[in-house]
Image: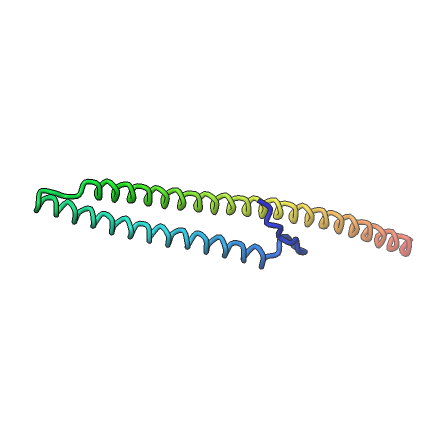
Length: 141
């Protein structure tokens, strides 16, 4: 997955990354809400089944075809909801892991650049210090 984040002076554009994380959180929130709705629907279906069972107990008869159709509908709906929630969760986890890995790589790059810049500055300061020492020695001798 290539999000195409713009690279700024110190790494990825924070606003872009934050916006993408917000999008992923929203998507996960929608998946959770969908899961809650599916669970509520499943609970309603279970209540209907219980009602049909009560009817069967009271009357001794019930429409068998209606029960089979309802059971098929419940089974299909809950299976689809579970698969959808699992797919969304897997996608969010994968994208989160990719963003984390990209951030680690970027952080390592920034650290390496900072270390290289520090070494260069250290070398330049050493050269300047040597030059100052040489001038001081020349002036005093």
